[in-house]
Image (cartoon, rainbow, N blue to C red; front, side, top):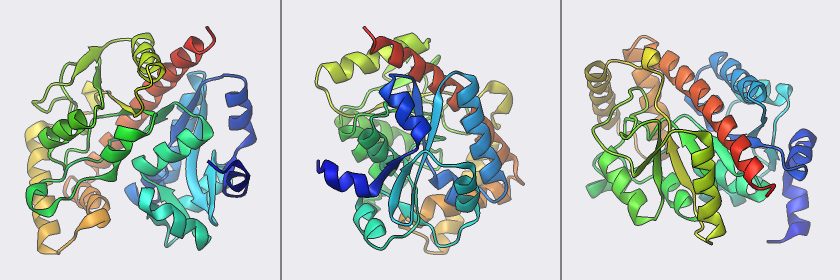
Length: 311
């Protein structure tokens, strides 16, 4: 890693840099959810509240994005507002970094890209809504999210409400197993399915406390086993959608996407927007609540992990 080069393209917000230097808990946050996952002004309001929750739980938030070709680890309030309304923001995964930086563009980081940036900054825990995975019909299309490959090689723990339910959850779990990524159910033995607490698929392990999860993270990396962990945290029971209802909506959204020829990285934003329309906004409300819940859990895992590093 060229440290001299990194000084020019990686900017760590002073609050985040000071917290990391002092061994305090820091939680990384993605920015795709701001620019591509939610409409304005809900996107900015949600991002601000997620940061507030993390602070209230005793950790430091670090929302990550690329602005004018510079990787920003920790955004100001003005930058959050700008990103929430900016046009032509590139959805950035691993492959996109060199072009976006070279062209001094604005980029919103996906799960994969946020993991890369968090690892560069030295942040161990990352909170998101749901990870990408194996898309339905991938046997023919080979449409598999780069999030999974990143989880197999980049050492960041990802707290999420499972994989997005628009995906093939069974194949996603199989792919994670192949990559050696442990899927930990936080307080559950079943993989949550984003909008619902149940999917019909079991996780690898159940853990019930931040301390247990932090210990697993600690031992994995200290054994030299590089790569991430998925901490699958179910949406609160009072906020979940009816499984039969949302499954039907997802099938309709997938059909509409196929009819319109929507593929690749445009698929997820389109499907989430279409699901929001078909559910008359209830999916967006559930999405927001599950992210808040993940922020609370992620902050406490980060605190427990930071404490372990002191001994």
